[in-house]
Amino acid sequence: MRIAFFAPHKPIDHETPSGDLMIGKSLHDYLCAHGHEVVIASRMRLRNVTTTPCKWPLLYFEYNKALKRVKDFAPDLWLTYHSYYKSPDLLGPLITKKLGIPYLIYQGVFSTKHRRNVKTWLGFMANKNALLHADHVFANKEIDHKNLSRIILPEKLTRTRPGINPDDFKFCPKSRTEIRKSLKIRDTPVLMSTAMLRSGVKEQSLTDLINAFAIVLKTFPETKLLIAGDGEARERLTSLAKQKTGDQVIFLGKINRDELFKYYSAADIFAYPGIHEALGMVYLEAQSAGLPVVAYSTRGPKEAVAHGETGLLSPEGDLDCLAENILYLFQNNYIRQAMRELAPKRIKEVFDQNLNLQHVEKKISLSISRRNH
Image 1 (spheres, rainbow, N blue to C red):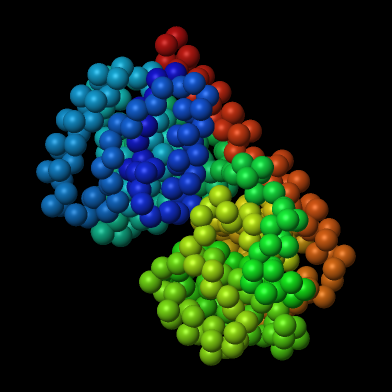
Image 2 (cartoon, rainbow, N blue to C red):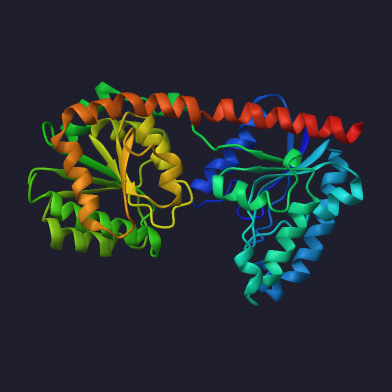
């Protein structure tokens, strides 16, 4: 297949990493690796474009450039990754209609609450137009599938899941020994977390984790917390950790994703509260490496973690419960070991990106066939 690919929220080669970026890049790379010709239709970022009038002239010029680029490429279809009210796809519906090719959206999002706000109404309507124009929409999350089913016919809507390559995040005994030796924590209980250390919900999640960890230390004073990641909030979080836990928190800095499995392997439990977390690829990575997960029972963790089977979830903001879950796993080796064994199996069954994207690939091919007939 020849595919015109567009990510209006953030180009897949954007310099700032994120879970959304990884999902979009995985989709793009999978299609390329399986013999499909893929061209980036546009690299213009449409985030907040409907509330930024100064960008509208640029959008007009970008439309003309994208139209020529796609027309010259002569694709079989247009595939948009992640369209929602903040970053609605304003190019795909127009260009595909003009060229008469199928239009598909992977990770479509629809939330009616934004139609009632004057600041978000235009973005909401633009996104709704894109969704209604699509020949097929893929929903990555259960809440998105439920909301989209209100406006999309069942035969045009598919519930899929993001995922990881489980082989990239296998438990490695050698790495466990090496990392623990290098950090001087050979026989110490180890909790691990990873996130971008930026202000907002990421910083709040790690703040909650550090405060909960301080409670854990009252029972297990030798426990270490490893935090992988970097960002503008690092100094504030380091100061908080020093104040609350002394030297028991180790900030690792930014770790390349292909090296993370080594640090997951060195830990015993993965913890990241996940305030407003959409899904959280780190939950999948950690479980693949055999780590039980402790988090809040917010939307993302609830989809990524099987409560009581591969981790423990607690009400958002309940630091005592968060700490109790960490303590419970440290105190119950049998339960922790059972979760360590089950977690990688569930990732392979539910969140193997190759299996999930094979299903998407078949649906894409079917959409072309239907349009041609």
